[in-house]
Image (cartoon, rainbow, N blue to C red):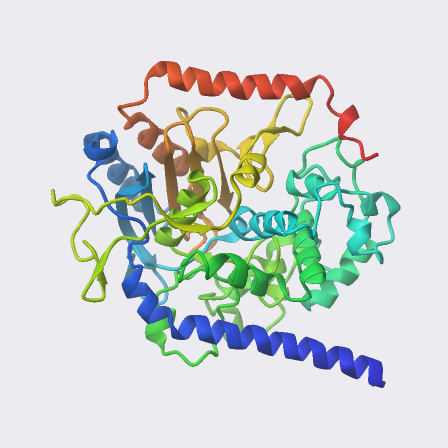
Length: 488
């Protein structure tokens, strides 16, 4: 190895050590933070924020019925409205194999593609606010070694809206590992359609965004997210890179919802498991399920994030607040107020308190991220990193208005946010446990429909106005699609 290569390897090792040290630091304070911010947001009775508790109670029967049909082992459902949690409940089990373990509301989930809006898109938008990036910047500006000139002309906006022309994912029958292996595969990638002309949901596009974050900030994208977004947001159980081998006992890892065994996980996207039987039978727990992110050590722009319902609730409320964090509940004796009481026990709710003054995103940035961008001739829409009205939007349900937004994750996770009613729904499951055959598509949609139907204080005219604004925005764009979407 020559001196230059040695320096490069030394730099990479130093950055990885930096991440490991950061991960250890974050995890070492995990116990304290989990006590202080156990709830994340204050709690209210549904009636106090204009919701029908009886309607929300219908969620339980639906979830339990699908658990009985083995569509999922368990789930956590959390509903927030007007800055407060009105419903939070765990159902079923988080583990079935090798032993049954009950689901708890603080279970840590592999949230899969929720990584895209929560970590990657948010980090990109912060970098835009800092003047480090622009939406019309092209891929070739940051990754010049890519061979396909058309690929190099793709913009950040096209990556964020899945109109880049890239295929959905890498063929993992090709052997490569690590970030360097991903970049080598990326270098040879060619577009399947001209940029800006077609919506194709693409993990590769968000891998590119993660690589751009790393190159511009000079640190891995997970370090940037943990430092710039997660820690300031006080989301204490959210991050990348949770892997066995850190100095914690099994009691720590039991807080993670396991997904699939390694043999099954390796079978996705053309891959094939070639290890020994003992390794193949091990269940992923605290290790990313997505096979591409797994090859990259759990750090990728499209998947790899772990989180809890309460942490995601805090993030959703930040978006509803126009980029400002809600004040955490008051604490007494080291425990969050009401942390030992069920949320439906009739006790007075904690005070919502508005904002604690910590701004993560500007109001303008949130507005730009969550406006509808037409991505097809049929009028399908995405936000910047968010889903809005495409074939992937089933978790909106039947009643939340067009113009609301959210995202799903392959492992069985989802969030949906409606600014019109100031409501969000967090649905977390590990439906791929134990055999990869679970299905929560219908369930996520039904839960959102129930939540929307439980809102009692929004007049019908307000819902109509929200959709009228959405259609006006779509109609203003659709006539020009795809001509104006072509890169200049």
